[in-house]
Length: 315
Ligand code: ZN
Image 1 (cartoon, rainbow, N blue to C red):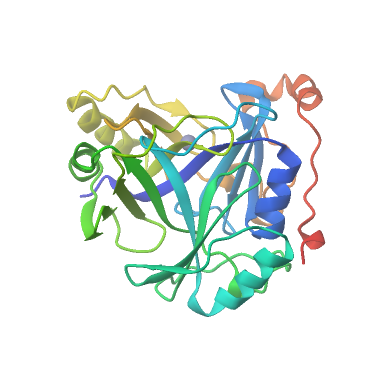
Image 2 (cartoon, rainbow, N blue to C red):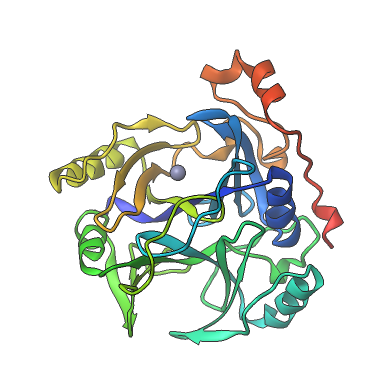
């Protein structure tokens, strides 16, 4: 049985927390499914955006550190996170990006997809991939018509010096198979559906990526539960990739390790999910803290900048 089922989430670094909410919940219309803090640095927020319930394969998360150094895209880094939208929504999205003055590259084709590349406020690489393969329901605050809304991820794009060593970890430790290739692009998936495609790009001539605002911190792959996670951890350790112990992230448990090309990989459980401390109607509305930080709530609330969620301002 496969231990890994696909992509769980992608986590990136951002600058201003309010601009981050306005961009992702407002302009892109993703649901803010959780507002919490970075468990390793509780003076910094941790925002989770996704579809209605924050299913694995839809979750993009941010640590908005404020005014830290800007990063650089390059090899050894996940440079582009792509969202899945209906093929018929291309005109809608071109108009929407123009309306909010977001610079984008003209539509391009790759495999059997049409996509548009753009970046967020901090320079994070994003795409919209227009396709009719995705059966998931998108979420809408009402600012974007449901038929045009983002359904979750489509794929991610990782640049590497060479693809072989990363491919070996994906296929041997993380249950992925090669499902397509063209030129310097190799597409892998644990489950062959939108939301789970991992593209490795051979980019030996690019500069090495540097962490900072506008770059991805890590990608997490999904596993069913703690038992499958422990089995995956053993397989990763056997390859001498030195995984961390299992860590409690409140909404899932996690292990982390660095793949041979330099990208930080995580394996996160599908359980228990975001409804463990808020019900479905109220996800993301209040600042949630894990039990071990609850006694410091007053200090934490004082340390983070207040933010508001106003997707209705982004019609
Ligand atoms: Zn993570």
